[in-house]
Length: 138
Ligand code: HEM
Image (spheres, rainbow, N blue to C red):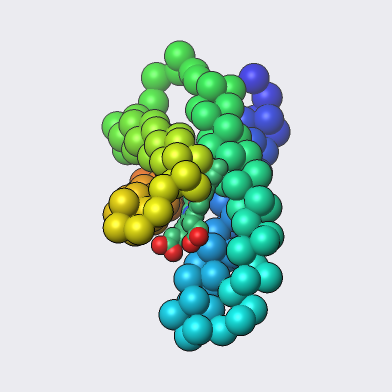
């Protein structure tokens, strides 16, 4: 598969993720500050669902189109395993997010915290993957 598709899907996944996350984080902040604007933002959450789902799908697609049989140095090999972890974390975050909508009370709080933790795990693992495998084709 061409480098353009392999690297492009990775960066598109990162871009979708970067666009998906500010909305619920701002919502959380506005709620804590008891701002009425939180209501308006709640009505826009569908955008977060779409972008979050797209980020997870692109993360998996990026992994599939980047599969290679070429022998790699140990660092790059480790980077690919970390990338697998990032893709799994993204898929679980999206699945948990979809279930989160139907929950209420303390269960929703717990699920939201796990959803957030999975996002952080995906960012850390994805960041290490970029460091070890490089941001662009060489
Ligand atoms: C993998 C992609 C996704 C990431 C990285 C992500 C990330 C986040 C983050 C960081 C928050 C804020 C958590 C907090 O403030 O404690 C959040 C909230 C939320 N997300 Fe996601 N999300 C993703 C996908 C989805 C999907 C696909 C859905 C639903 C179909 C979804 C539903 C929700 C809901 C319902 C909330 C809580 C909003 C509220 O506070 O009322 N997420 N997400």
